[in-house]
Length: 277
Length: 231
Image (cartoon, rainbow over all chains, first blue to last red; front, side):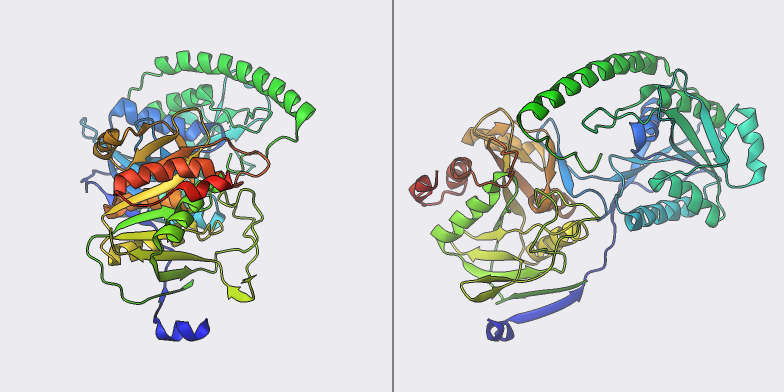
């Protein structure tokens, strides 16, 4: 078999593990702020960003694809296929203040190396657009039911502590912020970009089978702070209704899953947990 | 990572790539294997990767995990050495690049899919048909595509959409990443009943349904009755 190889045309190449990107537009932005939020615990950050994009009618200008994203594609309802991606949106502030870049996506890199790579790329864009301030969003896991989510904050330098006070954000001085959402905040500091991270309380709730639940209430609390901070008007009323519906849904789902698991225990061994959730 | 590929400089004009890999109930693999067996295309390229395990630590193999890279090694078949690899065959009439995929571990999935697409582009591939399985209620065969126009076109073969959700593994990524290279692709999913104990347990009946549609779309003269004894 080896002899056959010799006859063959051999090509050895280094295939660098690079990220692919697709640029839709090259906007000109004026002293922009950058707000980031990728799907994580309770989808708090992602949900907030989605809502922000919808409310501001922000425009997509670039997509990132990383080899460290989960290895699947999404088949959408209309039958078309979509890649997992992270996205950059922009919004121009017509009142001539700071424009906005929103960084979000339908996934986040799984491996630590991948999370660093994505953060590196995102912060390259931040530098390119001379971002004034980066506001990262994340979830603050309480592990128990949250009646009214509080918003915590961490800042890259003491100057920003006033910001926290001004908007009634509770300074967080111990703990950890895992994943890309944490890295975006932390590595921005290393690059000399003023950054702060807002964390909204969420129970970090999972159903008995390990499904992570969307926490609309936490997103709503986060958006309220964010809108004040960015001085933009966001109507969070529609979210209220959704939050209520979500809560009812959670209870139903919990009940269903409990029953289902009991059934499974009786008959066969339960299937493995979805490893990505 | 080092990659080796070899081919005997094939001459092609406008080939259509057919892509299948083990996946759900091994439908994609059976379809591709059967095409290779019946149409006897020529093997023109093999792609090797250090990310191809011979033993997977995840079950099913196409849902990898960063902490479970599997075990590297070689396989022996009838006394012959066999490395895990992706095989690409060429059929001249009609011009088809029949690709039998292999699932890489977490660190190689995107890389391997991109390598295969690089090769497709070198060969001038502009159209691709991916074959796989789906485990939901619906028609025998349903489809997905890179654009709505293609879905409309498939209606003439009585194929409609019917699956919504994630598409894991080699075939899924080749399908999706093809968008970035402007390869117009469709995917045919054969309906199957997921076998919870072994998701890759072969379902030749579902594979036959996919082959039947493929036969019409590509106008292949191929006898599918040999699949029946496997039911």
